[in-house]
Length: 110
Image (cartoon, rainbow, N blue to C red; front, side, top):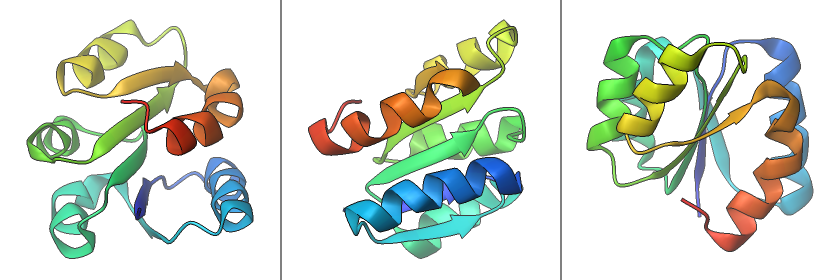
């Protein structure tokens, strides 16, 4: 397993990294704006992406990836949630990210 964290927001990124370190999961961090390059370079099995920071190019790159994708964002941003789901991502509200991250990684939820 290798996780690519596509998050610029330091608060969310530090929380995600704390979970990954506790799980001893290898990971890399990149900006959502450079998702395409990071996916090619890192070849992750799992991707966690902040949908509030991801543009349409990032979602298009995720759609072509074989990695499992967990997107998170504000629950009121239905358009981004829909776009992420159409790209094959599982989507959760910001408030649920920390509750869903480890089970998603552990069970391989898509």
